[in-house]
Length: 420
Ligand code: NAI
Image 1: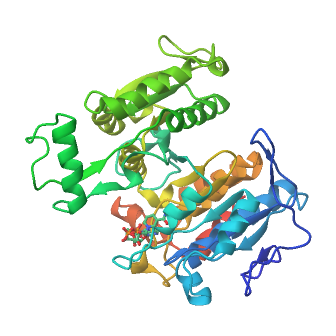
Image 2: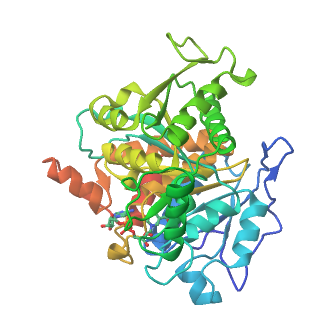
Image 3: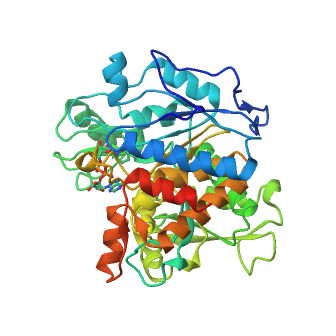
């Protein structure tokens, strides 16, 4: 990459003199300078192809919207394969330090080597800044999609990111410590042997009031700020009363907090400036997303359900290649593509850059820069409307019997930038 506002890693992260860090105020709101440092991790596999494409499009939108008055300084940080090659570590200390200092950042996919041990880098990143909500706004921009009228899909999935079975409190079948846990539950807690046979494994599913409520507040604030109408609280509370049931009850307690008085209603028709909060059982939601996706604007749910629901919602608009995501905590935010490293197509220049590019647009909105974000959405729509795209997009159009022009990753990014 040869843009002057891209500062590649050279033995260490290069922080340009002319750039400033975003500041986190006491109340966790952001103070964004006109020339912020935005760290980026290009990622593994197709990362080195989609990251420059995203930067190209975001740079073009910033230039078009602000004519140089506001400018991002992209600072490369290492993680994953490239970090291992250059520093011997998959997640160098420097990366975590600069990410924290810069408050807002963006990353491509990172591979988790199977069977090599070590924690997933994504998990390390999420925990390091307590990004407790994973947000995926799912909308359709004209790409080939598997359902009729995909414009009906416009839903933001808020997945809790710091709780649930992902905390990995697990006891493997037949292990010594599993025997202890099992004996305790049977002897001390009166659990039946039918429920816990000798050969069972046990996964603990913790869910906390504090973690749930901060997540639900974030979803409600977002819904109100963005003029949304219906927020569905999703879980299987009828079966898991102590966890998903509790989550749903806590969510409705949040709706009664003074901050949301008169703004969040739980029955009736929401009027201007109000949202309606409803509860929906997970399996119902999965079905309704397919049959009636227009019914919900925001889905707020737990970690595991959020994983399933966000993948299904993404599939409705053509797959994760088209959907952005943000991991957000108290002010700190890390935006990322939703797909993986796609090692099978890496290095061929065919990867679809939209998930990361739209994550870039989502990041701009988070910084309060709505004009360039809007330019990106409109330009992507125009390019797809002309049936331009990477082979996955062009192939999708052809399967629909339509002609389409196939472009490389970077040419697609250029085509998007030219349509602003
Ligand atoms: P994947 O998303 O990398 O690939 C699944 C399929 O989708 C492949 O056929 C791939 O070619 C295709 N694909 C994915 N992104 C594409 C794009 N932008 N354009 C065109 N085609 C695309 O999922 P997989 O194979 O399960 O995971 C590979 C690695 O990625 C694993 O190590 C996994 O841990 C990691 N991963 C990382 C994530 C992250 O950093 N947030 C998220 C998901 C997976």
